[in-house]
Image (cartoon, rainbow over all chains, first blue to last red; front, side):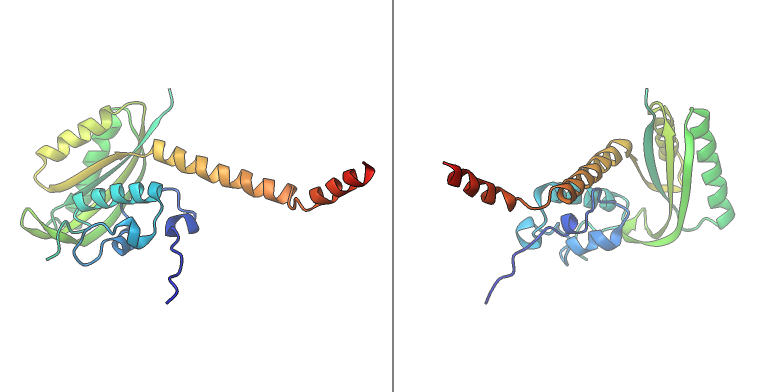
Length: 70
Length: 137
């Protein structure tokens, strides 16, 4: 099976700032267990992963995203 | 001194009526303005399900306020008021001007790159000229 090369979704979409209020985007990166999806799986680049992690943490504080799975 | 931009989000208890929410928002707005901030935008999202219960509530009324100020005094005052107001169950204030500036920088850099590509597209001509030089020798 040929593995497709992963690419950073945020770079491709030209997103310069990841908004913590945008639950739709953030929830793609918090799978079932509610942990932040690691880069090695999502393919997000380092700088965007940092931004993403911060956004997710902010969203969690506002109870927009869960800290742990139910 | 350039003005700073802040984004303040707070979550109110779901038991409030619409009038009470408006009243609370107005009073927060006023106290921020008294501290010298300019309110740019107030966005009421309305009721939303919380991802987990907060102070025994399963829902919350979200309000986002964007404001501009020369210093953090207004935000400090708002945070102090959020803490003493029982109707506020969560709040978060973020300074956004630096992030926005960074985003603008990236955007500008992309534009420059795009233009460069448009002006000098191919480098294909170089090898040809090299060949010509060789011929001269």
